[in-house]
Amino acid sequence: DKWDPLSYGRDYDFNRPFFEQYADLQKVVPRMSLNNVHAENSDYCNMCVGNKNSYLIFGGDNNEDSMYGALPMFCKDCVDCDWTNYCELCYECTLCEHCYNCQFTYYSKDCYDCNFVEDCIGCRDCLLSFNLKNQSYYIENKPYTKEEFLKKKNELLNGSHQNQQALLGKFLELRKNRIVKYAHQLNTENSFGDYIFNSKNCTNCYEMFNGEDCHEIIVGIKLKDCFNSDYLGHKSVGSYNMISGFTSYNVKFSYFVSDSSDITYCEFIIAGENLFGCTGIRHKEYCILNKQYSKEEFTKLREKIIEHMKSTGEWGRFFPKDLSAFSYNGSTSVFLYPRKKEEALAEGFRWHEDSQLPTTQTYQIPNSIQDVTDSITNEVLVCEVTGRNFRIIPQELKFYRKQNIPIPHHHPDQRYYDRLALRNPFMLFDRLCQSCGKNIKTTYDPNRPETVYCEKCYLEAVY
Image 1 (tube, rainbow, N blue to C red):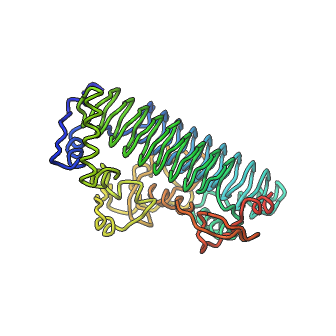
Image 2 (tube, rainbow, N blue to C red):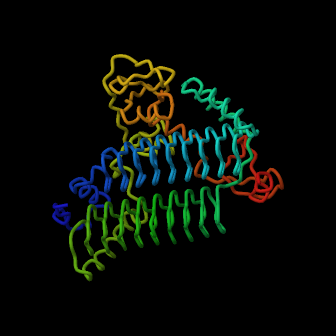
Image 3 (cartoon, helix red, strand yellow):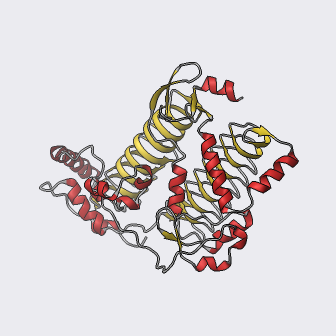
């Protein structure tokens, strides 16, 4: 924090395009290697706050003893969990809340000791089941006695990788025949999209919590009047074409702005006001290209630059892709919008070649966790799907042993991609409720096998 971002300031040149001048500034102003705030023994996390003893957590805050997750919050002893809140001892879970000791559990709440379940609430000891509410000892949506259930569960979940993958395959087949509600929405009014909660007037939004009057948002928490932006949170208002903003007002065409207002075409701004074309600014106002101006000078020059950008066709566009600090295959795009190398290069993206760990042979992973020795943490493993190699860290091995979970055979990125494949795309389709024929907008493609109901019909069928 001792370096001065204003020391890199420069005058605006009206003989050159804005983005070209911004690129020059971007290359010389220091950038944070990781956005990892208040981390304790969690050096390998990014876009995070308050994690402790955690490893490869991205976008998740206040987790403890957790590994390999995207956007987990307040979780403890969780591995390979995404969009999970207040969960403990969970493995391969997505969009779960207040769950304990669950594995391969999706979009469920207040569940304990459940495996391979989806859309369940308040359940305990359930296996290969869907749409259960406050039930126990169910397998494939059929009730068992406690003794019968535990016997069968112990036979199926015996720590064998072969058995685990067979159960996963069966789960994936069963979920094709389940009844689903057209959208994951709760306490929502006049909104379209998926995973929208406690929100009003939000259209084409996904993973929206407590939003109002927003359009085209992916991941938003406590937002109002925001449009065409992603990963915004904590009472942001009036954002447009924005990525990663927190507690900010009137931010446009910018990336990673926190506790700031009236920001345009900027990156990495903390507690700034009235900034244009700046990067790395903290606790400053009335700056353009990291150069300080008076309020009057700033206002006049800003309007003049906007007119210049309109003449060059730059005004209103987000930063072009060649200004991204990330290659295509080093960003989340590779998961959400997958393209082959040739396709990405043809569209103007950069591509970096993976750096592989040195290895002379493929380590043969034992089928059962009981047969795994401590030496595996010194071995280089190779993902059987992609050929990418990876390691098992000691903390990870301890978790697998504690939970009787077999060692994964896939690279962490591949495991994340497999979990994403279970989620619907961020797009809407017009369909008819398959019960009453009502028109619905849903993320379930009409060609998908699930039975899709409107909310009324879903509640009648499930509850």
